[in-house]
Length: 125
Image (cartoon, rainbow, N blue to C red; front, top):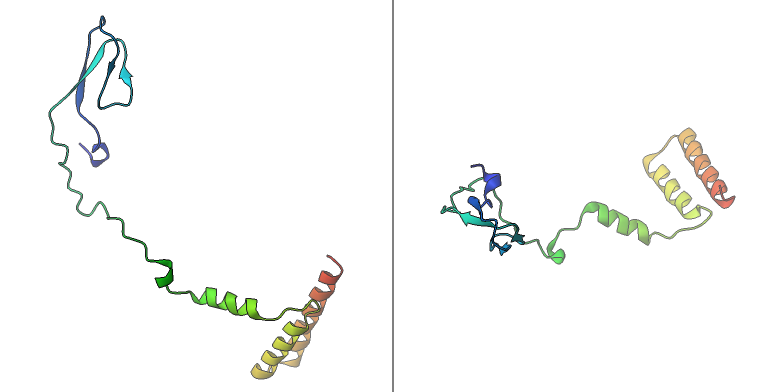
């Protein structure tokens, strides 16, 4: 027998047509038409589950779980002030430009993209 049949109860059935339906203790329903189930004597716990089953571990309490850097980053971003004209973001971007000594052409391109985005958001596009 394979392990997928572990819950199988070996049985044979007999038919005595003149009898009424009988409740079967191993099934959730009655056996109709005079059927009777006869369970064959067997050893139910014969399967060796070594390496096949993993016991369920208790989950860590939520307070004990380490916080991810992604969650921390989202929290920091949510604390930043926002503006509809993009001025706060533009100031942050210019500070990064200065810190990294970004090429003026790249600065102009990124500032232009920000201006386009702010304009399209203001116009409802």
